[in-house]
Length: 150
Image: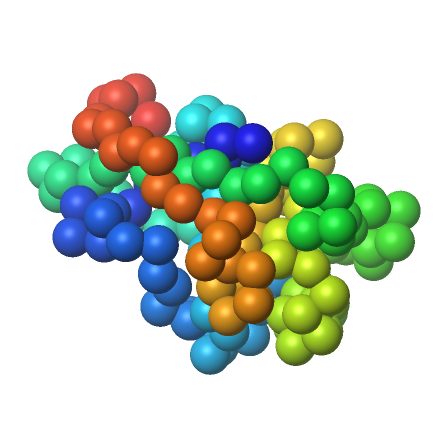
C-alpha cells in the first residue's frame, strides 16, 4: 500500500520522526503520520499548521508499507469518545496511541481522520522491529500550495 506525507524539503529524504506530540502520540514517541491520499495529507497539514509559508519548499513523500494484515491495528470510530474530533480529546487519543506504540502490537496504526472521518491516517511506529523491512520511501514529488487554500 502507498501512503503520503508532506514535509519540508529538508526532511523529505529520510523516514524519520521528530517525536513531537500530536493527536495519536505523546511527546517522545517516534511515529510518522501519513495519509491514505495526497488530498487527505494536504488537508491534514493545513489543519495542523498554525501558518503556512508558501515560499518554503515542501515535498510529497510516497511511502510503501507492506500489505500484511498482522502489521496493522485499526481504531474504530465506535470505540472513540464522542468528542474525538475535538482538540479537547487529544489527551484521551494520545493515551490510545501511546498504548499502541509501547505495546508494539503492530507496525501501523490505522486511525480515522478527524477532518474526514471515513478516510484514514496511517501512523507508522519507527521503533517497531518490523519497520526497516516493511516501510520504504518509493518517491518524492514537488509540492506546491494552491493560493486558494491560503
